[in-house]
Image 1: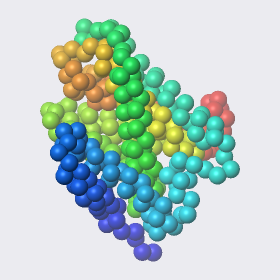
Image 2: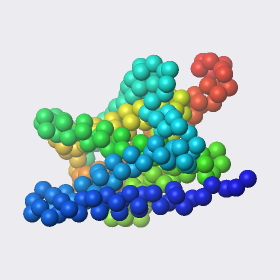
Image 3: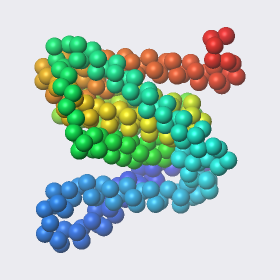
Length: 281
C-alpha cells in the first residue's frame, strides 16, 4: 500500500499565505494609515479565505470525500441542528465557563488579582467577535482540516497527539523564559487533546470545539479588559506566563483542570465505545 505524502500538508499554508500576500499588495498603493497598520492582519484574513475556498477541492482530491462539510465537522446531512450544532456548542461553551471560573476564582482570592467589574460595550463586542472569530478559524484548521489530514498520514492512535503537538508548536511564544515556555507548550498540547476529544464525543461535530475555544478566548479577553486587574508579580508557574497579560493555559492551575477534564471525558468516551451506560457500571 502506497503511503500518503506529507508534502501537500506541509506546503498548503506557505502557498496560500504567499497568494494572500500577493492579493493584498495592490492595497498598498493607497496611502491609507489603516491599511499600513493592519497589512499583516489583512494578509492573514485573505489567506484564510483562500484556504477555506480550497477545502472542497482538497476534500475530493486528497480525502476522496465529496461531503467536505461533514468531513470537517460543520454540517451533517439528516441530523437535527440542535443535535449537531446547538447542543455541542452550548456544552463546549459551558465547559469553557467552568474552566475560566476554576482559574479566575483562585486568582481573585489571591494577592495577585483584584475584581474591578468594569466592562464596556466595545470590549464586550471585541470579546465575542475576537473569541469566536479566532475559534472558528483555528478549529476549522486544526480540529477540522488537520485531523482529516492526520487520519491519512499517521496511525489512528497518533492522530490526536500529532494535531495537538502541531497546535502547541504553532502557538509557541519564544519571548518567555525556558520553564514558562515549557508550561505554555504543555498547556496548549493538553488543550489540543481536549478539543480533539470534544469533537469525538460530539460524533464529529466541530461546533463543540468552537464553543469551548471561543469561550476560553472571549471570556479571558473580557476579564483582562477591565473586569479583573492582574498583578505583574503573579507567579507564572501557578497562573500562567505573561505578567499582567496572563495566559492561564500555561499555569499549573489551568494544566491541572484541563488534565482532569481530559481524564473524565476519556472515560466517558471509553464507556460510550463499550456501549455501557454512563453510570459507572
